[in-house]
Image 1 (tube, one colour):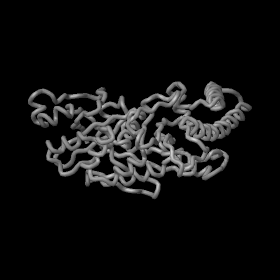
Image 2 (cartoon, helix red, strand yellow):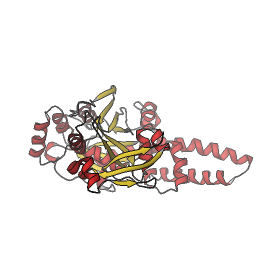
Image 3 (spheres, one colour):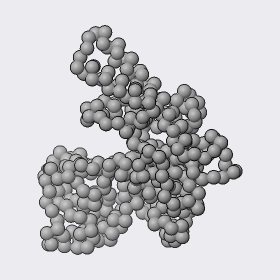
Image 4 (tube, rainbow, N blue to C red):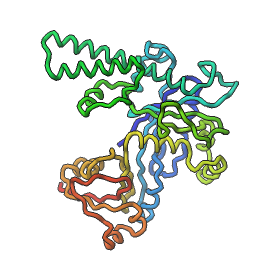
Length: 357
């Protein structure tokens, strides 16, 4: 399950520096090197120390981590919704992502002029959100007009519900409310997803701070702390050029235990309600991503659709037990569980799926 995260921001906030750090990030696992699909698309591995530990036990020939695709979306300026900057091209790119990362600026630098003339992360966020909302209002307006024209042929229960939902979404956007913050039924969400609204996507806020601020907590009014990731793009760029051992020392000197980019990846997984299960053997140790709440057959289907269709059972143990005792040891100690079709996957499950062809 590959994720696509769109990076957006106003001019001169450090977005390009951040993306450059992402795309030049050192990849320690040679079997899955960093690759650039296009000049503005980068694929990076999700850091997971469990893979190395599992591979050592299984004597795996290779390690295959899960990945995230980052898309650097350029051209956002005030008025983008009406065609300013890259306008529609920007909006078309951002509609395809799973989540949006808004990069806003908190660092001061007299040599880098902010487009608004002053530093105010909250104002940057509002500018971005307004452009997304204006674009969504145009989309909703078209769907609403089409639905209203259908009423001439008579009202149905489905059409009545659709009109009510579209009007509710329109009113929320008019009041500058992100659609992702509203509560809908499952059926309503299914319909909203067909609209592909920008403000229905989950959002993370990367606050680009100075090197002196990098270890300090950052707050933004009205935004949950778990959606805020303070990053010094300059530091991340420097880290990306260092060997792994020196990166650890550099982070420690700044009072950090984890790079900002790794924090961003973790925050993205949490935001999208994802978890990782693992498989490990002589051929490979691999990480797989599923949505939290997925059943064992659904997880098996991520490996191959035949696994889900012919699912019999799953043999599962916790990754820590696997590392401590190995697969044989887990079986001998009763730590290898037999789970059926109703089992809900947990993060860190090491799985062996049994299935009929």
